[in-house]
Image 1 (cartoon, rainbow, N blue to C red):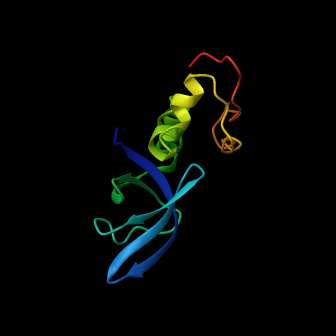
Image 2: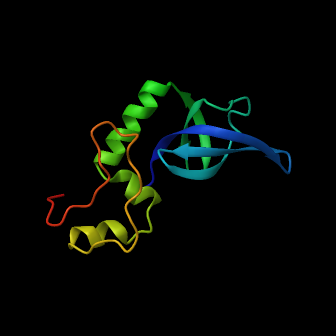
Length: 117
């Protein structure tokens, strides 16, 4: 699955004439191309699809969408290693601790043994 995911711009830089940004997706940081919205600024939220910021988004909508994606396991699918989610469904505990999801209201980020998914 390939989604458009909201993220917050942490910094911007120019690389070979292209404006790039370091973007935070609820704890996961990725480099993103700002070619379509080169005037996007640090602190703004953008919707990113296949590595390109395609539009701006207000903070409330961005945080709500990230929380929904996290609750549904979509962030793990999009940014995980590809094997973590199927392993969890089979009851295999990850080798590394789960990422901090304290930014999501009501989420603990904990993996529970035998939890229904």
